[in-house]
Image (tube, rainbow, N blue to C red; front, side):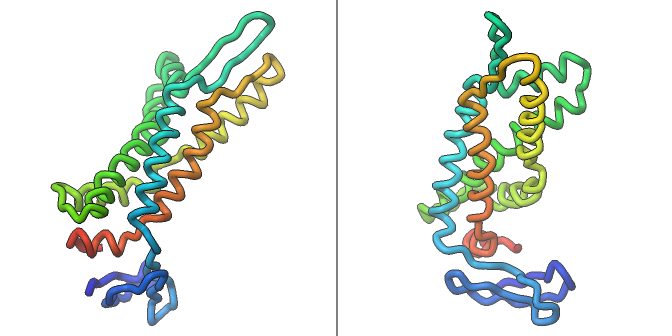
Length: 199
């Protein structure tokens, strides 16, 4: 049995083992404390693996191509970060690199590091610190904002040249949804129970 504090009123509750698709609510304010996920391990591994495939495509394949007459210029996902850095906008380049490249990759690798051993009933070192880090950095994945900026740029640049979306744009857009599905599939309460940590 674990204890958990209500996120709304801070009342401490003893949480018994949760049934599949069950939910625990605060006895004082009625807020949902946690909700058990069905097949959390399998779904998290599946979505995360799909996310890694999309991530590799998004990083390695051409992102956009600008065609003006006979001149075609292709850009990749990392090109924008390089351009920001070369123009001296170091802080923004670092933030884009962190929130759109490093944190999503770290989240996916962290989920696989935690959930594959859980699937195999194997204990690995540093699983608890890795899961704490995953939960801490969840709000810092901001690929949606980067994608919105790309769409705005495509509309504005479309007046000057023909913009041809690359395979990486499609992969990056799908990655946003797939990574959100993977994070939503995580049953934190079950993970803490299996790891023997405290939520």
